[in-house]
Image (tube, rainbow over all chains, first blue to last red):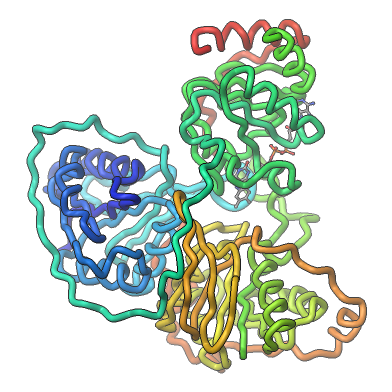
Length: 329
Length: 258
Ligand SMILES: Cc1cc2nc3c(=O)[nH]c(=O)nc-3n(C[C@H](O)[C@H](O)[C@H](O)COP(=O)(O)OP(=O)(O)OC[C@H]3O[C@@H](n4cnc5c(N)ncnc54)[C@H](O)[C@@H]3O)c2cc1C
């Protein structure tokens, strides 16, 4: 019998990634919505010298943590990690397995899906149990789909575990609670000698100037700003924020991919998101609609961006930003 | 050395719009392109070919008219193309697609398989890693640079959120490429011209002999339950403002946070 919701807990530089904690909390919410199932939230921690982090996973809401700690696992290796997860799935039969939509998660989860022959839905923006049947364990996973403002709800009825990847900032993590108790289980790792990939060197990334996922204010531009990118930068400096962009500006080569907001870029949740000349395609809004306040400027009063905006200004974004900047002189 | 590049023909979706009344895609007049991450894969393979010598084969799964994309690939300078096509394959989700492609690849020779990271029309980024698993190959996804190839090894750089890693990978192996990896060349007029005489190899399920339970809609673990247009979540009054008034409104909203 399958049971429980498993969450892959990703660790980078001996720190748990926020997205994993967000998923732990989401799993808790799902379980609370179906108390009769008697499911638990189980974190899965794999790596080298990571056992000390298991308690943290519990403080953030997990009932159990399965730990696989081994010196061989210090360098992430898809084959070995997927093999371990397969072993864990075979041993514990989880009903559901969630992964952060990080570079690692998007590398690992599909490999696992092929290994255990189950479905995987990428970049979920909402997850719930079948809302029409309170006894159903079928997970309804919604993601932005193909083309314009379309969403698709995906199910995986006959294969287990039901799996999804979710990007950071889509769900919220719980408040850390040190009183929380849970069980820590060790998973024995049979040495797999897959040495097809070896590390030549690890390069610290040149600290990126900006990290839009942490910015409090984002001045974001779309195709409607393509001839005035400087204005976005100037405004961001004045507002002590960061510049974001729609994919249109990345495709045109005007902005780096690192600042793309949306389904295939970053998910952001700033206090203020100023959307300038962005039409508001679902792939874009998927990455910013949880911002605390959205101010949209667009010349087209029918632009869908206004459907998610708290303040909707119909007007020329370049002129307005220019005027705004004069206020800070 | 044999290199297989997996490529997909996709609609130029950044220009795709939805009919809000019917909730369906407006497909009329949408041109198709080689998926950008896959195009980077083709380019990477061609550069290896130029430097080290290699035979480059492009493999795609799709309807018959995906052949036009393969002609385009010939125009770029690849040596062989394969179209994996069968009605029985229609409706496959990513895992079923991966099984079909993996089976097709078993009929070909390869040292290196290059897949685009993800297709712009689906964006699941799953097919590469799934094929690697099905063929038991080591994989490196999100490759942003190929630094070296020699003696059965390929050296690549990939980045995570915090670090970059230079990795030495024993071939046969599968890597997935980002469109940022390189800038694709233009088609060569002579190659374009000759592409019409070249053979596009076709595999259907008589060749691959996959169990019907493993492919198409039936063989797909995931199903689309429904598609819908997002309900409007918020509605604020639209204000038609001149620049000065608009700046006032924005400053007022910003003030508590500056
Ligand atoms: C699978 C997939 C994934 C995608 N992922 C992403 C993603 O992660 N992020 C993303 O952003 N997009 C993504 N897209 C693309 C997305 O569908 C849209 O094409 C894109 O967001 C459009 O960018 P835009 O709003 O800047 O451009 P457009 O849609 O061209 O809109 C430009 C807007 O600017 C307005 N405008 C023009 N001039 C002015 C002016 N002077 N002042 C004010 N307004 C003006 C116009 O009225 C228009 O509304 C994805 C697409 C697909 C198919």
